[in-house]
Image (cartoon, rainbow, N blue to C red):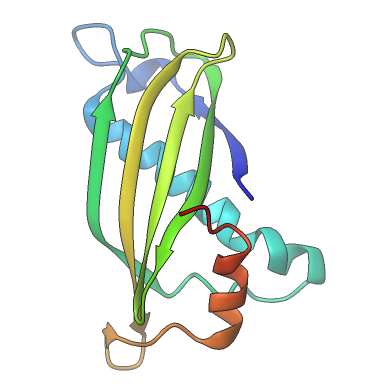
Length: 135
């Protein structure tokens, strides 16, 4: 299953060349990932299980520039693989007209917040991730 979130690009997100600043692509996927991590738990009025994670790696393939601010873009995400303490996610950022602007990927590493070190993915986290696994 895939998850899609509408993310707003503000006019001031555009750089001096008139297109979305490259760092903002990571902000768009971060916001979508945050909403996704709450999607299941919000429906059950529970705390999110996937908030204790950090980005271990991020990649962006820029396919078509985003030249317009003041509008929403779709960020679609899914899980590509699940390991012991980390998982890989894939993302696509597209416009209302269907233009694919970027493909992104991240490796998320689970963190034990008490000691600030990586930890294993729990069974409930693995079950949640597995719903979005399209490897």
